[in-house]
Image (cartoon, rainbow over all chains, first blue to last red; front, side, top):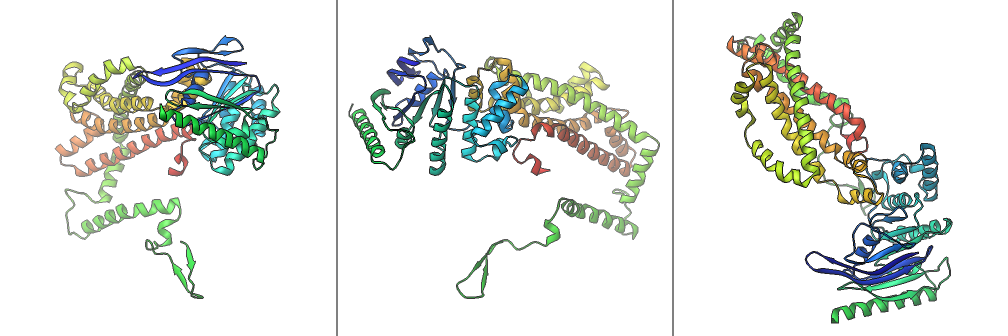
Length: 250
Length: 282
């Protein structure tokens, strides 16, 4: 269980990025955080990842405070951020340096097979397409089997087809893993949020706050063309619009 | 070149563009090498012919055959090897010292903000001094023999290595470093697994720049008084009016400079296999 308790963040120069964000996420739950630019959603994710410290409030994982990067919390960034000097398999095995070589090679081969990159094991990152590179980045975060995987607009740099393909793929990886990891996805793509999440947190800007939480009670796999899917999407968009209008009015 | 069928049947419109160069100019690595060789060989043969026909005495610029004979004579009596070794030793010693100091200070000022604030302004000020200006001081301090020569070469090698490494460390992608933080790397692991490989390409480039300056400065160092070395052959050739010896020494410099640079390139190539286009460039 991941708990965010009244997280606030003020940057030097008095930029008020986050104000009292509280959120509880169950193990194995998928939560999407959506919001316009400047609502602090990426800042929130960086605080959970331990890359930034909150000005007030705290992050708890299974009751213990998270004060820095944590072995049970992985993160996938918008860019793949693969190490260009390592092969794809060396990249995926980066977090397993303390394992025995044979052990590591087995886990990496397995992970590459699961993300469909088995034949790219010896390739350099520059030889991968955008979608393949992001798959490798996801595999790198998952090989250490973290309880929580954070994804910061992970597919926003990809073309529409690749994006849908990778969303489905992420769900497969999540469903195949036991126990299922917690996923927190920051996105500005409402369809992505509805396709992935059990629950959508809508944030509003200046300063970043929680506007509303919307439960997505659609069975998986989800049909993006269905009426129910469209309804949830419209609901989220309406909430998002309200949040922006209210922010503008204040 | 693409061809586009025009609406008129049977008529092909070719795309306008650069005139087609003949095939022998474009294909293959070796033919490219031979094409590059054509101009200097033609000039050499031309000069040889001019002197052979008696249109010029060739006293100030000897024809290639005379230079070759001089080169062979110097090589035969062992003088060339002796001079080349002396020069090579000076470059090697100066390069080693310059690289050691440049690497140490470059790493320090790149890694630590405090060290950067304290050291970099002084070093930048010293860099503004033309290195040859140190010669009189080095001779006073270190004498006229090897030490002052090696010191001058080391100064020449130091700056490109220092600047190259410091700049490389400062420009390491923060986003990549952040991945290291996510994997909770310790300080030494961060240096070994992320910083070191990230700065390596720029560092190797700076080493090669440093080596080039090392060869430049060894000539200056040997001009300031040496009894052995390729630079001595240059001075000796000038004072005794032996242009063939000067050109022979110049050719020896070119061969050694190119050879050591290739050696450095070959030694570091396996570390840089991942770099974009590295394999394609050579």
